[in-house]
Length: 80
Image 1 (tube, rainbow, N blue to C red):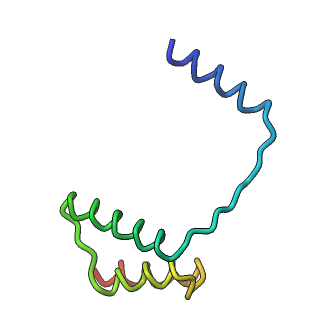
Image 2 (image 1 turned 120 degrees about the horizontal axis):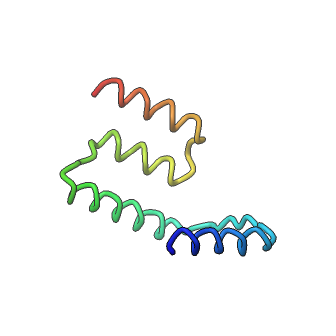
């Protein structure tokens, strides 16, 4: 029955027009989301280093592009 509901829902979604909505968040909302993510990681026993924290804040503030963010994140991951 669950599979039937999933396939029915898929049919309904394909009839609608797809619209991409980009939402801009305020700096306060971004910082709040980052703090929530950090808290969730800490509950799981993972703690961000100051370097990782700075990287996330710079990306959230729009100070770097996505490709630059990925390159720096990969460099941090290699040094772990």
